[in-house]
Image 1 (cartoon, rainbow, N blue to C red):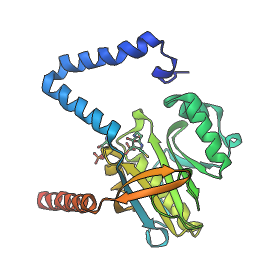
Image 2: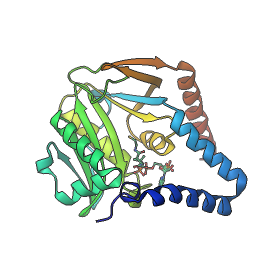
Image 3: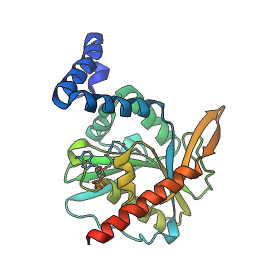
Image 4: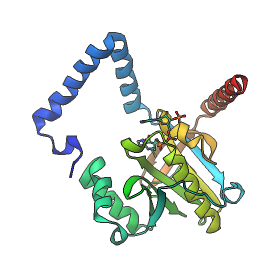
Length: 244
Ligand SMILES: CC(C)(COP(=O)(O)OP(=O)(O)OC[C@H]1O[C@@H](n2cnc3c(N)ncnc32)[C@H](O)[C@@H]1OP(=O)(O)O)[C@@H](O)C(=O)NCCC(=O)NCCS
């Protein structure tokens, strides 16, 4: 099975591959585009701002989500319920030892893993946890609140709205289970996930920074960033309205 490159690469490959990629990018896109790309990379490393979303589950109006053929969703609550090929596909995508450890830890703490499948192929996944979070959260959770986290759609399935379908499918299950509120957050630079969540029932809660010390989260909300995002969304919907 294919494994994530960096983990299995020799030290020489690990050093030279990024350099080769930069040179290749420079040749194909020119100096200005390379500098801009590098700037995005630097911002990603140093930005720790998160965009937070929430939804009142019982008001979310998603009592059921019908999945188009051949999509299906399954919920797993322990490693024993997982197919070995699914387990390996998930583990091998990033850093296998860390991902395996995280998965075992999350199941151990009562988290659920939701798998979205296209026919027999695993297309993506997302995690939920009720009443608590793996790491200290931005917002206190009640015992019947749900945290959605770590969603991924494998590259060959991206751009087909599988992620919003999975998120809304999970919300519909949460309605059935009588949950109260659901929370999800995304890094400010992660435009695909921001756009994707815009297609779900989640509402913008705010933009914040967090530092955790000894299990306690210290959160700074950034109201002007929230206002900017609301303006941006409003402008986008106005432009879309003018086109129609
Ligand atoms: C974020 C992510 C889950 C979205 O999944 P998805 O099923 O592709 O979501 P959508 O189909 O709604 O597409 C969302 C946006 O991704 C971008 N996109 C579209 N096709 C794409 C492709 N082939 N490859 C990458 N991104 C693409 C577009 O900006 C799209 O927005 P648009 O539909 O308004 O044009 C997926 O890109 C992913 O797994 N990314 C890596 C992991 C990650 O960032 N997870 C979120 C952190 S919790």
